[in-house]
Length: 306
Length: 226
Image 1 (cartoon, rainbow over the protein chains, first blue to last red):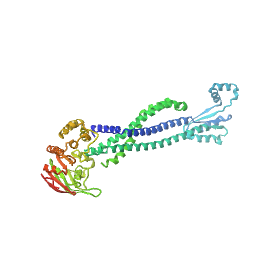
Image 2 (cartoon, rainbow over the protein chains, first blue to last red):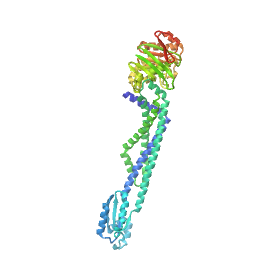
Image 3 (cartoon, rainbow over the protein chains, first blue to last red):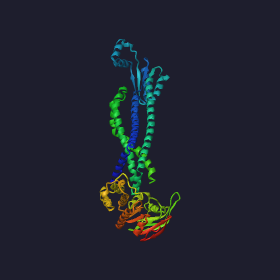
């Protein structure tokens, strides 16, 4: 194909797009919705995954030790846990450390503690366990609650945080499922709409297509403008969708940040900025794929007859 | 230049359109194909421009058997032919100039060549003044001349015309024939399907008659026979 040929194909594709008017608008509109849902799904998925990771790293166990626990046994217990898979670190916090920490937490605490005698420390020594893998939580709890360690372990503190974690995992799974379903539905809808748009274009130009072939146009010369038209719906849809996403992140994330402290405005904006080309590239690519595949199918049926 | 050997054409619904057609056409000939409607004239032309393939037999044009030509080569073959269709097949929404230029565009000719060739051809068919006019504003004879101009856009060795004088009054029809004769004189083989008795008699060129799917008559410098 010569350069002149390519130029004419682009020109024809643009002209078809323009002449289709409302049809083109509908095709672009549905493409925007599809890509928007897809992007939202991807962004939300990444966001939730990040949050899960962050919360998982915050999930830890606090094993309260009895006051009279011998240091030797405590050390042995600490080593056992440390060797477990999925454990990031185990730190021993003495009664005094706990006391000081509590005191320094706030002025009010200082006031309360100042009224107690130094020997009246009501707090306890503990082992603070940090986990790499939140799924290993149950196993560590089982070890700590084993009869073997009854003499030194008072109680294991974890349950409350686990609830948050479980809710979050459920939420993630829900987002994944809902996002995937919506994406599939809308990809199907855009396929159908673009397929029909291209079919109508071909139908309204069937005479021209027939004449083109009779005066010596190759099949590709006939086909490519339609493919290009399909791709054009994808490209324009992707650009509009990207603008919407960028604007909504810009305006919505500060509002969201008030309620959801995990995502701050700067973080998600930075996140988008860093991946600007990746996101728009992916959107355009998806748009082009949807557009060209549906027009390929639309053309295939029609070109045989000419 | 063109040779049909033992060509049969049976359509899918069982209609036998052509039966054992043998035909030889030399270069620079002017041929009238005559015969009643439904005799097979149009089928003959459709076979020649590779719009249909014969059921049996060979059609050799310029040394190539187009009966067995792969699909992808057909466009290039068609660029060597000029075809004037019975129903013109002009683009209604573009001008006379663009209609002719279109045929050159689709075969990838350069813009400067198109700008050079199209006015020349329009001049040849006597439409130099009507370049920017749309087909619906033209008279029947003028539309036919645009169709001829477009057929000439590739500067073909063979010009095929299916009923070029179909709905025209005698004077206009003769004007069209004059153009075809001029094109023939410039070195192009002209094959014209017609059932206009007057014109055939006046032309005194080679006449091939098709009846019931077979060639019934083929003679040089002849008149209308059926």
